[in-house]
Amino acid sequence: MKNQLFNKRIPTILGICLVMVGVVLTTILVNNQTNFRGKASNSEEPKNIKFTNLSESSFTITYQTDIATTGSINYGLTKELGNTELDDADRKIGNFSPKNIHSITVENLSPDTKYFLTIISGRNTYLNNGVLFEVSTAPTIASSSTSQATIKGKIVLSSGNPPNESLVYLNTDNSQLLSSIIAENGEFDFSLKSLRTSNLSSYLMLDENTILKLLAINDSLKSSAIISLNQANSIPTITLSNDYDFTNQSAPVSSRSGESFSFPNIESQSEELKPQIIVPKKDQSFMDQKPQFRGTSLPNEKVQIIIHSPQDLQAQIISDSNGNWTYRPTDSLSPGPHTITVLTRNSSGILITLMQSFTVLAAETQVATPTSTPSPTPTLVPTVIVLTPTSTPIPTSTSVAITSKNLPPPGNSSLLPLIIGSIVVTITGIALFLLTNAIL
Image (cartoon, rainbow, N blue to C red; front, side):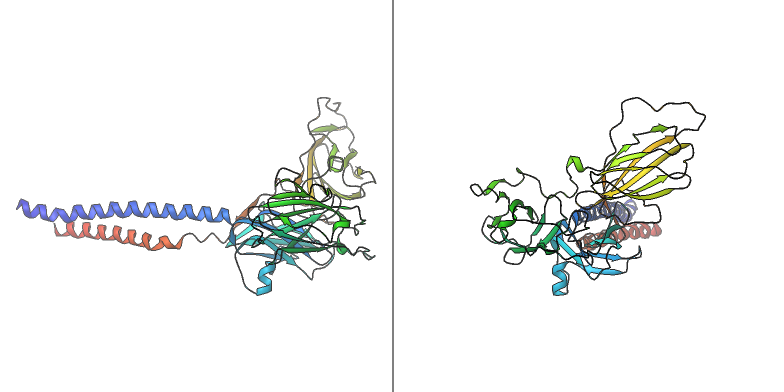
């Protein structure tokens, strides 16, 4: 009798063991699947995003990804978007192909017009710090460009072979940023006929002594070079990972990559042209209910000002030839705390947002402006939009970090059969346990 009872308990114990094994396997496999998804999402994230080749009817957006993945953008005149554009290389063949270097050009646009967009990298949609990217086309220029110069060159690896993919940037100290994908043989070219100033308002005046900056990148290497315009048609071959100064004929190779000047950083700008708010200082108090605000920007540049109060005030002014601007509101500001937001473009044509808090004191309040050591001027917040007038307050952002939204990463489908198998083991164990106890 005891042996019979013992024999009936064996399936019960076996069922319990199967249940435990199945639960453990399922937990481990699901966790591995989750970890894989997290890694895949990060590796597809667009990095080093730049808007280049801005004209009255087109723009280009470039970026890199850690792994080779497909790329495209959704764009439109409104936040509903509605249009799609592929990578330049994919558009030529009419099909998606994974790559690390991405360049997407949008054409047939309206001049001086704002467009919204998102980046589709792999199966993920990326935004600019939780909001849509914004970019504006350049205004129409009445006069024609007088420059006929063309820059031609070639990029190779240390082996002498051209890289599978590479992107070249070009600009001067006071011009917009251009970009070009290399051909299969490693060659690239730029037409300077349409090169504009950094604020895009006019074509850049060039002469034979104009210094041009080049930056060539692939998925892991980069090279920078400087040339004068009179060398435009005779640039020596550039080997990725080396930096060059072709204006110095006696020593064309200046250093290993990364040891010479950094180029191009579209968020950098010379100190004297650095946009800033001078007045008010942080949390400064004013007795005047129409305080005068001061700051600096690029010379003769548009400056958009928003005073955040119970009823927001907006104005657009132009800085003087030295880059100085002043503004005094036409309406009195109510007593209490306020914030001033200033939007203007830096030397790379990118809209930056400056913010500062201040307080307007009631007329009867006899409190002097604080005399403590002023706080540092506000940190510049570069964004990827170009300034255009707006009739509504423009939301500000604190960084240009990009975040994914919708379309979760696909995960590792190869683990799916194992997960299903572990679930089957668990169910079998439960069934065996219940069947054995029913018999008992």
